[in-house]
Length: 380
Image (cartoon, rainbow, N blue to C red):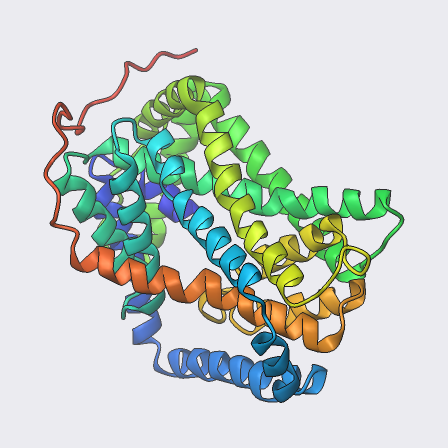
């Protein structure tokens, strides 16, 4: 989540503000003709370069297909089970950040927003607007939704940036080294520290939050005025109120939120681990710790915005890391492609189905309108 999105979540109408931020980003990309053309060309070049030139040089696709065809039925069942477990952990982070949300609705909104963000024109704006529309139909709207979006995004980013640090420590403890993973972990550590410090400072004092919010609002309005855009709808008081709401949510739900987010990410790792074992990579070639390091690298590479979901970068980086740790070329490419297929295609198919049927389901009984003013703000 970018600072602009966090600031949008502070407004009295966070759904509208967050969607507007995404629409502005999409509109900006469309307005800059040459920039848009260059961006599309770069994405196509990266994806084509990886799948047409790079990966075939690592392993011939016929050999890779031979490995895939050799999958045994027990391992196919294990892969499907790992995928189901992964999808089964989509809802709990939302349930933790938005009390009252059911497991079924949490799963549906996550699938729909993720799938539409990946395939719909306008991407994230469409995905976010759909998720807000679904939540509103089920009785959730206002600042509680903006707060949930902000907190879950921060928790996800902290985990994505934190796992490479843990992975490198585990590999080094086992006597191994991987320079690429170590470099990514070093960068992740720096960004992780910045987010933690910024988040902690913002929550440390209501007076400080109010001061920072007023200054940020003035700076944002000055910048938006240059492009003849409407001023922001938040100020220092919104920052201070947001601080109280975040502290209250974290105080009550931090354990649930942390455990749910961790489970949501680690089940993705299980899909990669099952893919490795299914194609015949034994523990003696790649240990669980080394597989975890490869997965941590892949999760960071997914954040590269040049292609959707880091497509191309993930495949090349993950394959290289697996080969470096001891997998054969064909096994590494096969495991990577199976992992990526299972974590992308079913999610898109189920997400589009969830988006098409989101009106199915009534507003949960007992769920009040969540457009509230929030707790009283003190200067502590």
